[in-house]
Image (cartoon, rainbow, N blue to C red):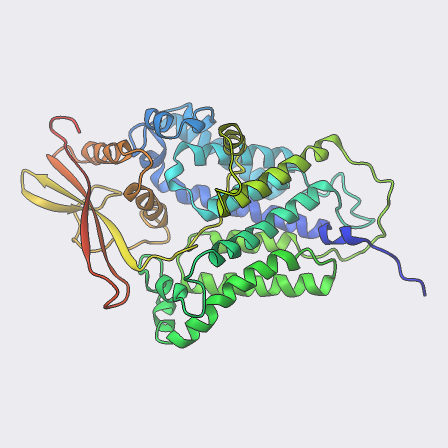
Length: 447
């Protein structure tokens, strides 16, 4: 029996049913993300919060054109937030899926631009999935559902983006010395108690096993970036299964917010088609899909730039295009080096009742002088932790001043505020504890 030729393009085929499931999960993820952000809507996205619009325009000038920067008060931001939730619900239900996806991407890009100090890998991945999926038939319309899989430039671009997440994450790890058999990357990560779950502490008792697993993570990510492009169903399913196990392990050991959930949802879209149809050479390409070709090339070059900036330089114009389109990305979490220090930010204030009163930086309320404990349901957890990451190394030193002003507005009784960065070695004998002043200001006389 003569075998039908499906072509190398089968590596870029997507299943219509998998795309529908992906669309529903993507909408659910977006709704969950927005509801979690709602806890700190005023603190993070209004002029009364940690980063007023004037500060965004000065510190992050590329953000000034986005919708979330138009209102400054709570009511206006809440109205845009409500529109964002409505679009996410429409995406979940499949109501005008492409339009809903476009609105979700536009507003999510705007939300990230409103306070760039809050964004991290999960936000970037979610935004990118929304962008590339806008060009796919998420509701099944416009695709030959009854005749076979979704093909074309849009499907190829979607697959290539996911492949690059793993490929460049692995290459970033390979560019440093911590992800080798002699390195202790996983050991340091498991010891960072602001992100480690209880299971991570138990695994730390097996340093030999962690040392063996450490380089395997790097090699697995690089291999997955290429193997997902192999046009064989068995290979694709094996890679998806391995990556799913990897993300489940991360989910069980580390508090990285929705990153593992976003990654698992992306893998759902790559489940191979159930029906195979030979490639038709005469299929037409839409003009809108042809526009994706230079975008894929742009994203690839940008990822190469993040890996080796000297070899792949970018111009200001190119940077603006990537930032304004929301395609900016860097897969350098825990890479190329891993911190040996566990750190946390402390706000100390002088009040009429005493000096050196420790404050919860997210609420201004008094607390014990120990480390903040991230919680799942309140964004004083990971959103604030990521904010502190940026706060300790701000691109613009005025960001610290805005944060102190925010604390002064929360607590009119504060007279003087100091932001301190405290750290201590993850492992005994690997350094010493330290306390560094980030910024201090006087509330009474203007910070």
